[in-house]
Image (cartoon, rainbow, N blue to C red; front, side):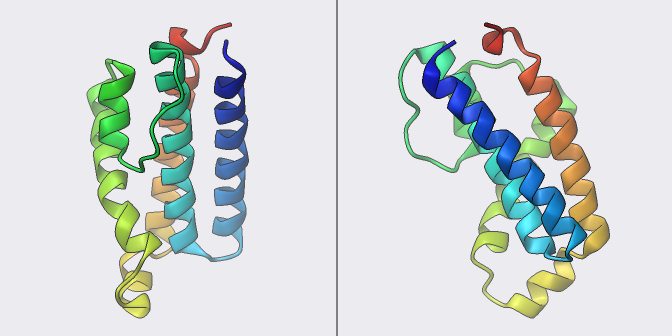
Length: 130
């Protein structure tokens, strides 16, 4: 496994752990943001292994899925599409109060749980076996 791939995985773990802390402290927009970031980094780990190059700088999870040539189960892929769409409004809310209402605790918790399941599948994929 490439050194940069190992770093992407370590960053993934750091970000998802931070998302858990944000949920515990009521910072729900940051839960969504960090869930997206953790998925972005694990997908970049896959891209690095498949292409044997550094991934381009992008936040587009769908692009990274395609670039990594992963055949992701539909439920995970649907969630990746959903969180990809949520990334911009949680990262740069036009109206903070409206965004806080759109992403309350139950929504943030659901995103975190779905992210953890998706990460587990992505981490166990043969691309990332040493």
